[in-house]
Length: 101
Image 1 (cartoon, one colour):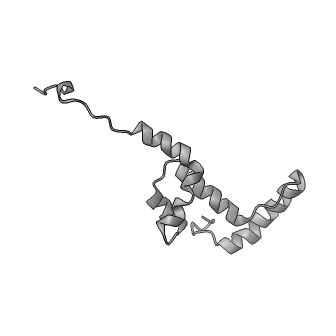
Image 2 (tube, one colour):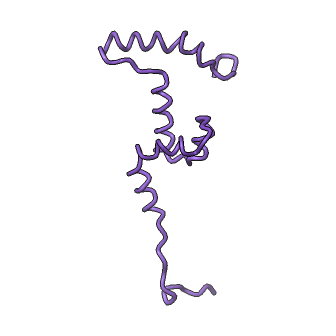
Image 3 (cartoon, helix red, strand yellow):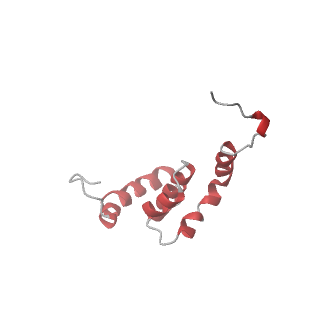
């Protein structure tokens, strides 16, 4: 959000902030250029790895299809598997149930 509490204009932000920050960073570190779109990929991956459901991530990113969002899931596959295992259902045998008074 900008100072007027409005969404930041993508093109204006790149011209005013991102280009200058990137130039400063490149001079200091001698690293390759980071495209603005690379930040979008990073944000999407962080949302998914942070546990935000894919439908919500799809809406935030503005993807037309959930399949586009799901492409990012492979990057955090092990984390998703770990979460899935922590929510696995184990069935009790009938004799293991206790009666409620």
